[in-house]
Image (cartoon, rainbow, N blue to C red):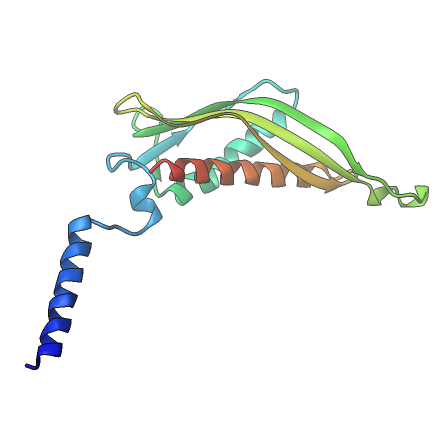
Length: 170
């Protein structure tokens, strides 16, 4: 074998050894939580707002998306490795954003709502808080008389922020 071929083979071997020695792993589900956290329970958030539908919509969206995106399975509270709990602190709706100059086109007015929550993810095995955020706020814009659409957008943003925050810890 010529010297250049041996050098390339040696370089490839060294590179492979270095990568394996570093223990590099790729993938969100492997790095989202400590290795023993495989299941999660999401509790309905305490609701300090007058909007009862907000609590249910937040809970349903979190159950549908949070576990899947964090790479864990659903479990009952007493059997889960991790627990998500929190409080809906405020729900400010009907914040004006834009108005139509033509009173006959009132539906073109834009509105904004804001949802603020406190949330934490707890490792039930160790009792440690894995991730926590107080005052997590999301906004949703909607056309006049279409508040549910704005609420849905804000809830989706909250779930995204929780996923990104939790994944950033590991």
